[in-house]
Image 1: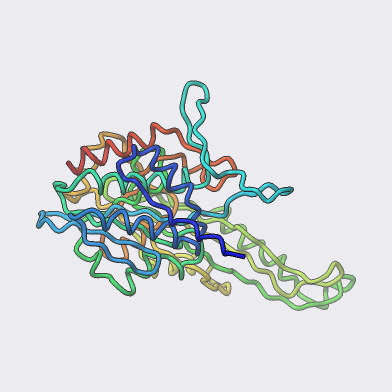
Image 2 (image 1 turned 135 degrees about the horizontal axis):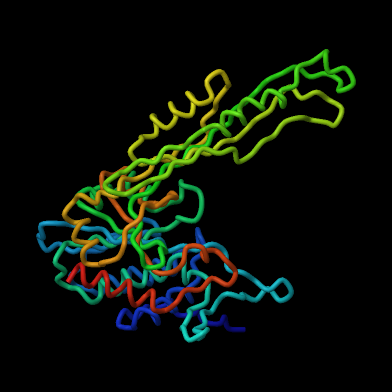
Length: 373
């Protein structure tokens, strides 16, 4: 019995309009750690463009112009998605292939990746195809492993192994979904475990022990009285936040607990570095045992720089501070200020009915063409 032939590898046609190209990208599944087929297609499409030099690093693809322009900018987007939703009875995918549907007079593109973030990837590819002589040199980054643990992130691999591909950039645009608005920089995020200790005893004789959960009252009191700061960085206001997000303690219903842990999350301004954020949290909880479990610094938007000012002027849309954390922080760690700008509503990312208005893709492509033409 003959073996059936292997299916042909997917091919991307960069001459498609940005909506059709987004659909084509989404229809090549690329769940985290399974980006190879899409990375192969992106690499092949970019190598066909003579004005670009292309580098492959794992399943991350970097393409660069080399025109000797006065400025170099980065356009970046990740290739991976969260898992595809499957029908519980048949196992068939429910949010692929993509579907174009008109709802209340507006055309929507449904499917995994339509928001996070293959629309942004399609815009990057269209810019690469349309602009052989942009007014700035461009580094295009299509990277793997954004949706999972940091060790798999393609930007981290670039930073560790081929930083020269990014080091000469003046400014970066991460095409994460922002509903086609501009969100500058991002806040840092720190998580810490604040622990109280007591003495275990039978709950019928609590005077024999010391209740660690009761001691957590002081931790919660400090959080309730905490007044978070607002910092203006490069003209944007970043609102800090410090909150309890988890609490645990006790081992049984008849035992005085000898340990209680309150996990707190500090979202801090990009004007503060990681060490400063840690010092602040330790000061707030002075007298308690504090263990820092995660600390990722934020990113300054760099809106005072000429490349950033030209970007904002070309788009002619309001600019707000990114109040969450994104991979623009990784660019900041490499000395490159960055903003978030891309198609799709981030509130719809990862949902089973993930979808975006097709006009978002068109508007983002047009905005970047205005800036780079």
